[in-house]
Length: 84
Image (cartoon, rainbow, N blue to C red):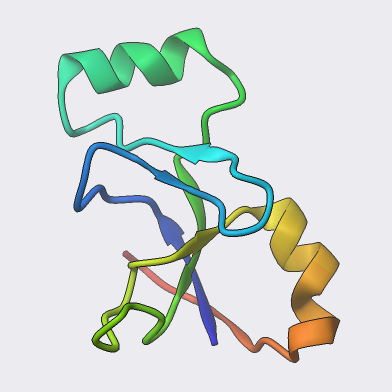
């Protein structure tokens, strides 16, 4: 299951599990906000895998919208909307 949500960084940044698109949390620091402003390819929201971490954590693995759309049927993902 995937949850559509705003990316909030547990670390410096993350990447899409499929295409390696970069996720950055602009609220983490001014440097991160500048990075997002300067690079339109950096993502600030996407799909977090529910229970996808090594110990079953949520928000450990991230997938961009394009890859979620491309692989949704193949992996039979159910997508939920969140209110962050």
